[in-house]
Amino acid sequence: MLIGFHGTSYQNAKEILRHGFTEDHFPDWTSDLGRGAYGYIAVPEMPFATPTHIAAEYARLKADMHGYGQADRRASGNPRISVVEFRVDVADEDICDFNNPEQYRTLIGLKRRFEAFIHAERTFTSGAAYRDNEDGILIEYLIRKRLMRDYHLMVMDTYTPLFAKMSNFANGREICVRHIGLISKVDLYRRK
View: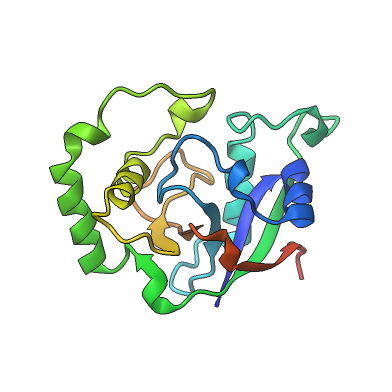
C-alpha cells in the first residue's frame, strides 16, 4: 500500500473527491511515466521536501499550462491549489520501479532502439507542447506494442522545480497509477 499526494486546482480537487480519479480526465499528451493519475510519495532518504509540498508546488507552477480557470483563482490572481491524498493498493510485482537499475537499463536500451519514433513530429493541444515527455511517449508505445508489460504503477525519482529552474538531482519520488481502480480512500490533504 502506498499513500500518494496529487497537486491540482481547487476545482479539480473537488471533482476528484466527488468522482475519484477518472481516465477521461487524463490529458491527451504524455507525462514522464505515461498515462495515469500522478502523485508523489514519501521517501525517507529524500529529505529535500515533503511529497505534499512538491505536489502543491507542481500544481502552482503548472496552473496556466493546465488551464486553471477564474474559479480557481483568488482575488490576487494567484491559483487556488489543493492537494489530494490517496491510497493505492498494489502488489510489488505490479510496480515498475525505474529506480531499480535493471528496469532503468532496460528502458534506456529500448529508448536507444526507438529514438526515431520518440522524436517524430507531433501536434499538441494547448500547453501540451511544454509537457509531452519522450519517456512517457516511449512507455506508452512499448506497452501498446507489447514490448513492455502494462504495470499497474510506475515509480521514479524525479526533479520538480521548487526554487531553482532545473537540477540534475531528484527531490521527490513520483508515481503514476496506470490502473486507477487501485486507488482508494481519496481525501483532501490537510496539514496535521
